[in-house]
Structure formats: structure tokens, C-alpha cells
Amino acid sequence: MNIDLEKLVAMMQALKEFEISELEIAQGEDHILMKRGPSGVQVVTAPSAMTVAPMAPPAFQQHAAPESAAPIVEEEEGTWVTSPFVGTFYRAPSPEAKAFVKEGDEVRVGQALCIVEAMKLMNEIEAEISGTVVRIVAENGKPVEYGDRLFLIK
Image (tube, rainbow, N blue to C red; front, side, top):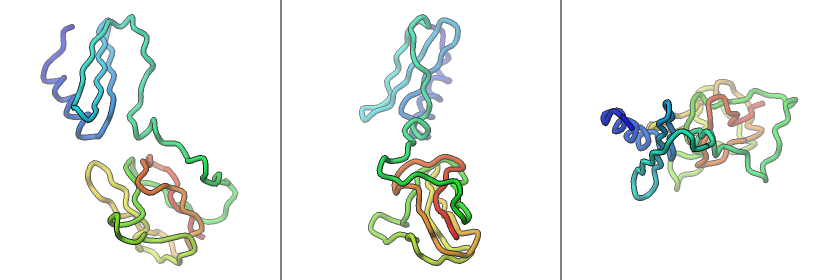
């Protein structure tokens, strides 16, 4: 296998920086699978004849609504607040603090609703309209993707 060491190091740094647990690359007959775990990054090489299912970064792979969550009804009235990017959703500014808002709370334009952490930056998401928080769909501490519904405000 002929791989540029600088590219390999850059890929390993990306695994850590973006908190990706697995990265798979296939080029011609060469195949590289990198896995990041508690003990660091592991690199496995194999011929491309090996059948491996394509993988997505964990933020996309593990994002599923919990079974206990109520299904989202498209006809619900109100305005959805959506995630402006991929990250981790937090309802409060710190683990010991109370949530920014809860269902039934009145909110005003510019009021902080939550935090979405992206690449180690804490980004406050603010209400763009005034109204009542009808639903909170996202789960605290769970990944969200760009465009995911977070809150319904009526």
C-alpha cells in the first residue's frame, strides 16, 4: 500500500478533532479503515476485495428518535426552531443549571432556547419569534443534524 504519511496523520487528527469514531477510505485496490476508541486510533489496511459496508460519521449514524418520543405530526401549528448545524444539543448552559426553557414557557425574540455544541464551540440558539414553547423534540446531550427540529413555538 502506497500512502502519504502526511495524509494519514491528517486523517487521524480529523478523527480526533471532529470526534469521528470510524473513517473508511478505499482507492483502487487499497483499503484503509481507521477506528478511534479509548486507546487511540487504530489503522487497518486490507485489499479492496474485502466487502465492507459504507460508514457515516457517528453524528449521522447514531441519530435516531428515541422510542418513547412522540411522533412529529406535520400538521402541528406553530414555527419550528431547527438546528443551524450538526452538533450536540444541550437544554441548559451547564449540567447543574436549569434548562433555558421548558414546554409551556413563554419566550420572546432573542431569548436563548438551548445550546448546540459544534467543534468545541458552544452556540446559543435564540428564539426568532415570540410565543409559547409547545414541544421540545431534541434530547439533551444527543447529536442533532443541520435542519433537525428542536422546538415548536406557537
